[in-house]
Image (cartoon, rainbow, N blue to C red; front, side, top):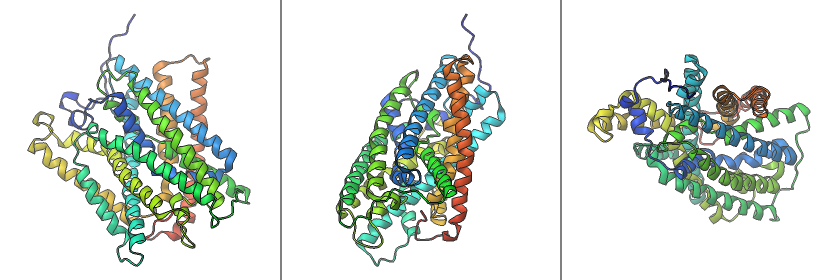
Length: 452
């Protein structure tokens, strides 16, 4: 007998009066639009750190961890989409991660736990996108004007102004064309970097190819867990329910097609960047492979035009990434500040949107300028943020909603993934925090150099 539709006790207000849902998370998209959003959320300039990740793991373990993480995240996001589909069929379509977790687990504190982690991650990514975009501008400026007087914080201010303008695009769905361009940009700079690394690897000026790991066993272990945390952050996507919310109902089955599109791009870009960069530079790989191609001492190991074009592509994509991860903050703000009855572009809603989004971007820009060592926090973010949202909660939510038999393979697969990644999360947080502390003497507020 079909069970009657249950009301959702975790909807804070009726959706009819929820401006965050009606405006920011407008549900008009097709599955390929979800694919564009997913790709922008996952495939970003962080893939340029993959050779550095392999430096901490070596060839064999590097390939293994990258492949396992790819399979596990795809599986995790697939389960998440199945949970969302299950709730939609039961008459409770969830468009926010926090509502989904609170409803399925029947816990008010889970609502606040998810919103805290999700907001921290998304704001952190927004800060990082502005910082890296500012660094891209600084790289281009330094190449054109080696003795120029402009500092990193001035480039960050320029990027922030552009982000303030772009942030006025009112809905997540309105980013679909920007995110299609973002997908193409990710392929573009990946191919440029791969070609540059191959060229560098055969160059007479290339560093000796040494793939040995650190001599100390404890240092190797810490480096390995830091690398695993970075991979988790690279694959991480803490906004899948919000992306699925942009799909026109019924959304059932559409997200899986979007995931397949996204992971096709992941397969092409992640492996090519990791292999070519680590092959060319070995344990000399920088945390940004572009810096390895442009060493401080000695000639550039790739044509300036190739590196310059790759930097431009990275810069442009960072705007899209910053916008995508800002959507959760925007829908939280507009849930309280906007009046759904007044219309999306009414003066009543336009002025608060302009003010609040401008203030949010100014905050992100200020933090990026003040703390230009965000790269060192990447592993910590992966361990304490992305691992709970992407490797633990989806499995738990699936077991709670679909209730697979406790003797089934899927049940124990989910339990095993939760247990393994809980342990990896603790170890990764410890090792990443240790590295942060060891590098603390390099940190300088409003520095003009980004700490790796």
